[in-house]
Amino acid sequence: MNKKITLAKAFLGAGLVICSLNSCKNESKVEDPKEVAEDQNEAKFEDSEKKEDDSQYLVEAAETDMKEIEIGKLAQQKGTDPEVKAFGKMLIDDHTKSSGEVKTLASRKNISLPTSLTEKGKEAYDKLNEKTGLDFDKKFVEMMVDGHEKMIEKMNKAGEKAADEEIRVWASNKIPTLTTHLEHAKKLKELIDVKK
Image 1 (tube, rainbow, N blue to C red):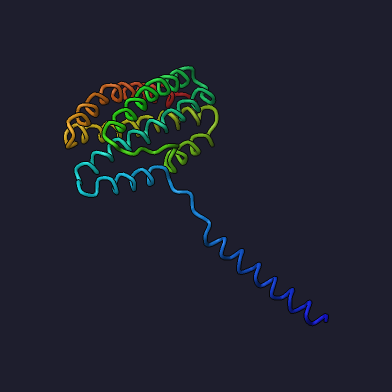
Image 2: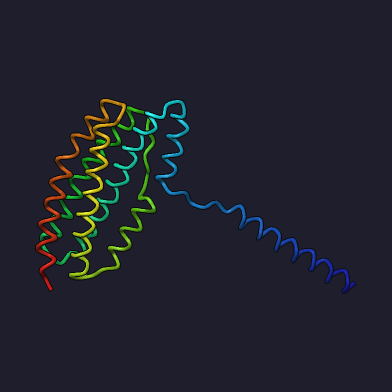
């Protein structure tokens, strides 16, 4: 009888190991919200590369808006310089407004957008959040200069190359605000860089 119990336990143990291994295999990896949106747009617009390209402009803008809002909040919490805190508030206000515009335009064009902060956005947030004091302020302004330069480049491209006229106009209209942010960030960087 002991042999039967031992054999039953062995089978039960093997069964549990196999079940747990299978459940590990079936665990779904959480997809990046940007990738989800891009996949949805690719499926919707597979017959039109131009629409798929246009959707990318809005996906990137939505991704940037969410990241800038969160980084703006972080600047208000952790910034040591009053100008850094003020810049953080400006980011929150302007990118919240921009986010609303992007969502409205995307809805009209049947374009899917990321629904939460992307992996890239989380990574940028985490890198900044690791810093404190003057190091935080310096990293923040450095990120703002770099990020706004890249976004202006993307909006210039969208303003010139988007197939949809409404998306071209929208992108062109974003450039003045982004340029204001960039100029502000550059001046702020000069002020912060001389601090010790």
